[in-house]
Length: 204
Length: 193
Image (cartoon, rainbow over all chains, first blue to last red; front, side, top):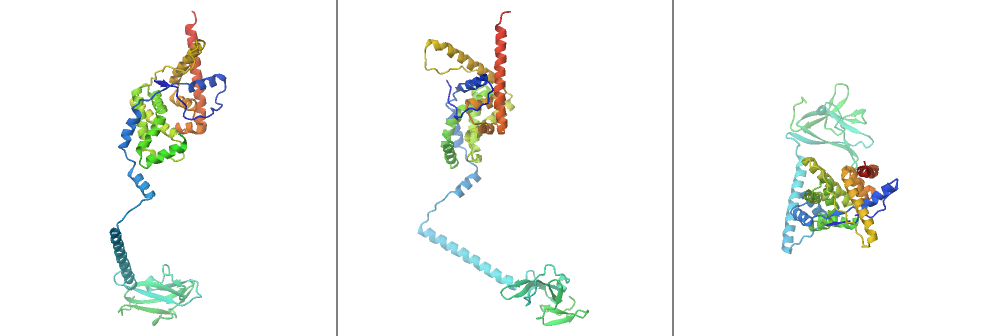
């Protein structure tokens, strides 16, 4: 069976033709009969696609984007809440223990945390130089603690005897005014002395 | 079925309702089947290829861009699939000329001659279309048989807008040339020696 059929889209044909015969041909094309597709086409397509599924990742995205509802019995909800509380408590306990350990224990075996402070609010920058960093200030910049108005830096040092000083604004070097000991540097200046651990070896 | 309705159908399919796809297959099976038939000249191959095209479109439906028209996208899939089939099988393209059964609501004897002329014109045109390279043939079919806007023809044939306009225009001119050569040949053949 054949039928002339109707066009899929009704639109005004544009002025593509230059002459009457092109217009006539274009009108004849509109009259071309179409073959009817076999009746089995629709059911056979459906039969195949019913066995197919969209890609799993696409189904996951669709699922995640659409609202979902979950139902619990009161007993299930209470059990779930208890488990969540238990997990969060265990996590909090673990974190607090870790924080405690970080504050008072060395980062690597043998190292001790040493906090240096300098009350010099007028300085624009302060670094620490000493025998532990070959008197190189890079990476040893102190941070200004806005609460107390002092410059601070935490060092992690193995046990030993160290000499050090503060570098102010990148040009002036002063010894730590709060140090317990000082030593001459051989050039007429003094360095602060830091002793970490039970150390009396003065070779560092 | 308008574009909004199509979009709703596609959303339903992507939501898991595969049976709704039947609405799209029903809507477009005729132009798609006729496309594959024009390309292969075999009803059997055309039916298989049309079925494959609809299944491929279903499998790729999640890639279909919302807001676009479904038919030009489907047409591209069917066209590429049929071309791959022809490339692999190297099938000779022989499209049978179907009988032109032009509808007429009058049985008046005076109109019978006009009807016969129109029928002959239609058959000549169908024959000429089989001589047209497929690129041009599909362009003029989409433009004048399906009455698609140029933008949709460009999408279906993977062309720029200006490329689609040129393809339609040249296709129509080539069709006229084929018809004119045929007319001249017939006249020469029938002229007395």
